[in-house]
Image 1: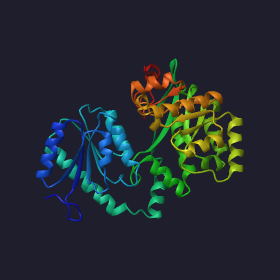
Image 2: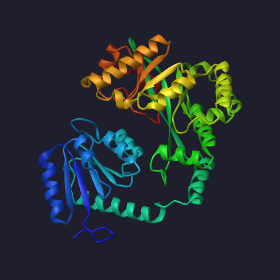
Image 3: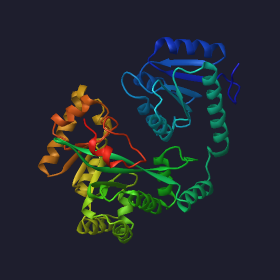
Image 4: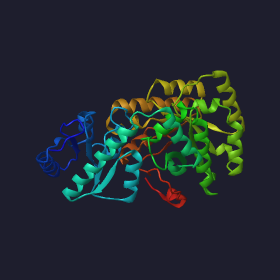
Length: 389
């Protein structure tokens, strides 16, 4: 019988809408002593997730949302990010593998696969996660700081670029720059990395390094388009303006092409200093965007405090907007607000053609998402320019 470290049966969740395959795997695993639950959609899977699961077998293509969505949500939650995930796909593209692993998946297997190989890989990821939890589940400040210092000193981060498009008429507008660690290590997600850096006073150093690497890779022609850089209020307050200015001058990037995207990793602590620094950035030519608008009260506060030139509509609202009247009402409100205040609107998380067509009809200015192009470490301006909706 297969047991975990407490001598209990190991629990598996299979998420796949191919019922024959799922039922067969379920039967085979049960004969080996596993306790198995099944789900045939992303929504059903999220309802059946529980912290005691030892492994999740997750298909990439599901009838309601992608396996990427499920993986992302689980790995961003403190209650479930410890559960190993093995992703399956009948179309084993290299970019799918890369995206899955960056989202936190522990393994990626092409379908159809040999059952013995799948079972062996399950054992490997469960054993590896057990060892990881034994050594680093309780991370001391010294361990975290040492890992952060190694990442900073050795520049162990890689930029990813996701294009943003004007929607009517459809045209390449610019890129959002995202940062990911080369090796996740003790940081399960990029968000965990930045949260730790913020907690231990290394956030500004990490953000500067991220920007420096990313901007240094931009081609001469890509510099002519808009560049979205993520930061938080703490960074604006921390008097980094002269370093940022020098970085742009070194890379020959015009400040009026740069949009600083305010995230909510921390709140404004010194309003006077924040507004002074905000003025310095704007006077130099920067514009500001507020991220995840509509996703919570805090984003509305950020709009009031920042008075941004750009708002980015939260991906949770955009996803499935075509068939959800409540989401449509929120988008209409945001679009109306932007029109009244001369603010540029961007829809995040566009994952289907139907949702793309819906946000175009509703008057959103620009959009980004997996349907258009996934984040990529490779800058391919020719590809970005020729993508069609």
